Length: 382
Figure (cartoon, helix red, strand yellow):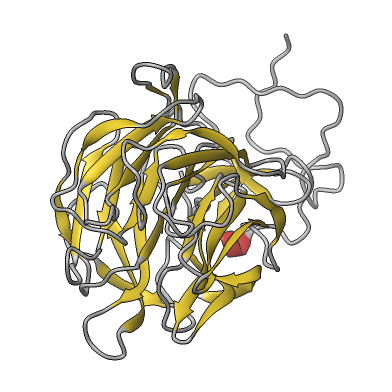
């Protein structure tokens, strides 16, 4: 192998760098520094295979030919449980809910397997309609109703089992809030509050690795509750909502690493609320929901998170028309768990995120419940 040592290298006209063609390799016992910049500073006309460091997300990313995607380096596989739910993979957690009593139950599953959920531990109190988000190590549940609006944020360590501990408080007590996250920040958006106008547009954020009270991030486009959320490492996306007297088809987004108000993304295929959102690093899915009482939806929509535009049809929930369920994901599978249609049920189903199609039966929760929320250590924001 030949070696070239240089201090300065230009082309023959001394007006730029030379063009290297053929097969080129690079080796070093130390490191190399790739181009870097914010999301806004991405090249305007990128070529397939371009690689750079995104200073907003803190991740390496590459251009697929259609969009920028993260270079995934995390291995979030955890051991499974007993019975049919064994093996390793991304762990999903489902917390709280209504049975018809407010419960503190936390279940877990291994997303790469099939089987019934198992007991993980308990929230600090029984409550429903919380928002849940996570890093690769911690899961958070914020807000809820138990009875009355609460501002409590709980956290658990995903790799273990056991009861939740106190993290801090939201900026205001509310339920029917929803949440999404990157690997570092968790966002809680909207919800029902005890004071007029009762539905809020507030977005809070926390640093997941620490503990402490939430801080104001910005505002949604309008007062909203019961939204469906998902995220990439750069963007948090919020869709659908309920604001008396109608449900909404609005999709909006924020850049998680900054603060500020949300911006318009596009529209869902169907107006709905109290559905479930989930994502891997590129695609977001929104499933089920309440269209208008007593009309439920079985629709699953999908979006490409890095772009903006209207959602497209993905397929249908296997459980039929449904609302009040939780959604979470691994890099390959999306999970919808619990809910009501109109009876409260314990059904867990899954879809393959990269394809389109209907949900398939996964197993059952430890107890039938609705108004549940879930998270995982392998979702699209990590």
